[in-house]
Image (cartoon, rainbow, N blue to C red; front, side, top):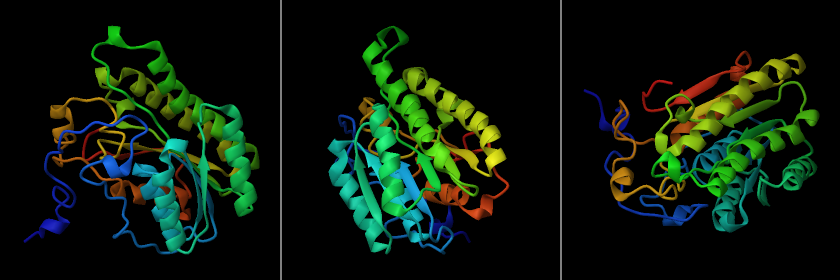
Length: 294
């Protein structure tokens, strides 16, 4: 007989979510139930021993789960976050330190080219190098019909998800050596776009193209470039999207596994793509979607 704890339909929160809203950037303390980042469950096995990582959007959600996993696998971890997210960032840095690794908090806005350059420079100076770059920071907002899409909101989505991704990667790229790994957080929205997230979905499709194009060039230098495509994952981004109570309550229930995922359930995908276990994997998009096809 299958134990409920081993049944993927029930391993994490498998009920509806209470109505809630936040302004972006969202905060973990205001997200109910609290997302699981693997604080109590992730165990490392030294797969990233001695590595130096930079994670954008590393303060909460998928970024925090990845930071915890990387640190417990032996990596030093720098996290980029908005200044308003310092409380979450401090908590993440504390978890990195508890794992016995060095953590670095980098508050700023990835829409600022100078900050992107500075974040890479400060990481390299603090750690003595950089060999794992996770381009995870993102922004999304719900729209009620295409005609209501506001130019300023659209620009924020484009500039955060695309400009911030490209600028940070460009700043890091010249300094990366053979064996380095770049990992992009794409989305199922790149393949199965929702009308209410049309501008976000466009950026995620572009990130897939970015991943595949850069992988082709970077491979000649021994650098691997891959992406993770999450499905519906419970993070502060979700109550900050602007959905009504019904959408929040039923978030993730349309997946084959019948529930939303938790950030902790993606950590292993990032560890795999950052580690030597994926030495022949580049230009790939790894789906973590609860069974939804890309």
